Length: 109
Image 1 (tube, rainbow, N blue to C red):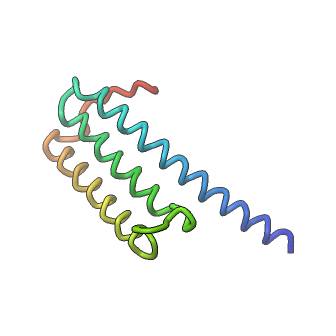
Image 2 (cartoon, rainbow, N blue to C red):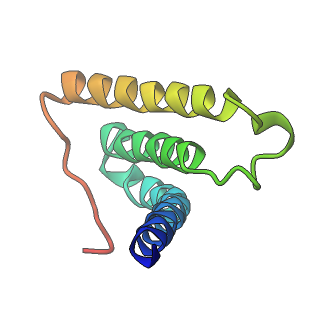
């Protein structure tokens, strides 16, 4: 059935698109980390957390043909889950220390 083939290809395309957005998120979070250093360590740490979150999304959606060597099997899922937990811990610490989210400099907005 052509309908099911089309749906399969759309899901595969969505996975690759989400994976590429995760790669762009890594670059964007590094840039925004350095831009927010003058506003304080809390603002910079928000983007350290987004860095780990982007790594998590990238690892969890990494196509299996790119996961050669160290990331084969369940290792990439475990590593992605660990980086997600690191991002949550950083955001929880920033939230508690700042009493909410600190002011951010979003150069893209």
